[in-house]
Length: 63
Image (cartoon, rainbow, N blue to C red; front, side, top):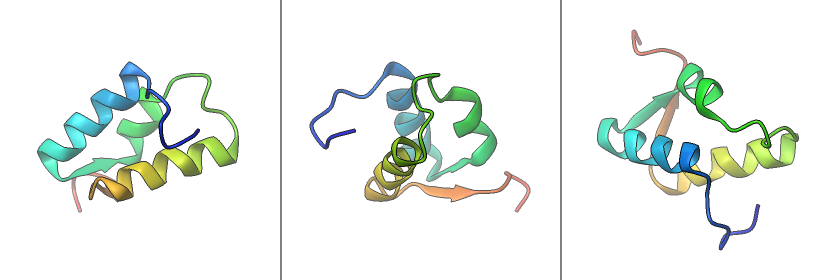
């Protein structure tokens, strides 16, 4: 995934939700990620993107 790549609708929705709440759970991410995100490098790129957007990643909402 390059920095200029147009992100899928699923990832854009996650970014919007994460910015609204300030965090995303791993379950939310796993359930919403498109099927074409399969390699560890792609997954790391997505996680880095959330970090760049100041979206925390948490285990569950009950933390």
